[in-house]
Image: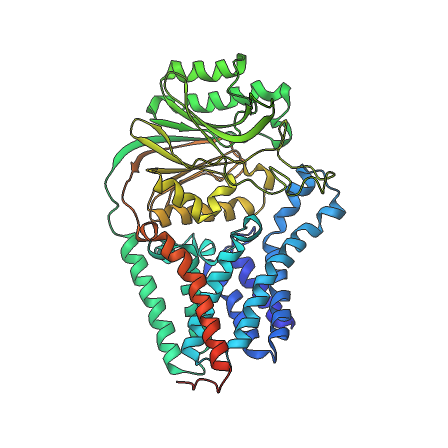
Length: 505
């Protein structure tokens, strides 16, 4: 058991972003081991146990950074915080165990070619379930691991993240089963070559034309431990104003500050908010910034709080606001808080955040900004909603200071890259401590910052696009066909298993 655990661990660790060395292609060792366990073990139960052990260790290792926000910023004693990545890994390992168990259940019945196809759709469906159940945690997917290689992720515009995972695992399974069938070897090799050919052709093809704008991104690198200190609020604003002032000579059409860059209520009339608005008015630019927001119910007097993005026009006036829709469990709200009153959320604020419910883009003139605040960039459905509502540019603002000098900011960036390719849009990403970046519709990083540095990034040739990708146009089909295909495979195996096994070909 030690060998498969070690191989799956190395595949997941080096396949995803990590502090040592990122080699995207080795990530396929992870599903390969889970397939091998399904073929080797004598019962589905044994395959589940082995797959769960391998998956739990691999996921926990890649998500080691969960310890940092829980202990450093959440104040949980390190003895209690240390098991958090392991517990999360053990949960995600359930999907790995189930995958291996299903391979073991299918392989006596299905011929090798069909078994590989079944493995692919099951993997894709399980990744979709991971990204949906219990508010979803669509992290450490196979396409996210491959994001640094744009050639590998171009099919996202055709089929989306989860179907691309299914294709990747199908190819992996065909190669794994090539010792049983020459047809599997031919299919595996030819499919990989076709993916590379399609990716290389697409990456080198011209981008669609559209209105061009200059965008400046500001990374303030504000210490998370000081950010919400009232005595440090003015210093924070001065930091952002100073950095932004450096970009004024290039006359940007849009300046973007990160999530909660403004650590006070911008909606209120006070000296700090006037300072921001006066600066915008004096320099005549459009500003998008993150800030907390509150709203009072006039009937009940109840106050609700939101993690928001404000769009200010060149007159310094707020013309549009977006409230974060998909909140982070235990970060921005506590699930079942009435049952766990002793647990407090990590994010600062006067009350528990409530989710927004409006995917409409923030508009001004020709701009239509599809907002993804922090964690929202990992969910394909949210960017789909923004483009459907008319967004011509995806904007991801985030504060990844929670994660320190860990792998999390890079893993987060890789998820955001997938959204750009899926939707065929430029994506601009402004973060507090990194990684700030400009990503084109092919998933290429045109500009990219580094962690924990004060910096600005300016890109003069961002195109506002309206074309829709195949994946966007047929999103519902791709969303429902994957679990449908997985269910069909299981029905076929169950039905065939009632009689004699299907003959191998």
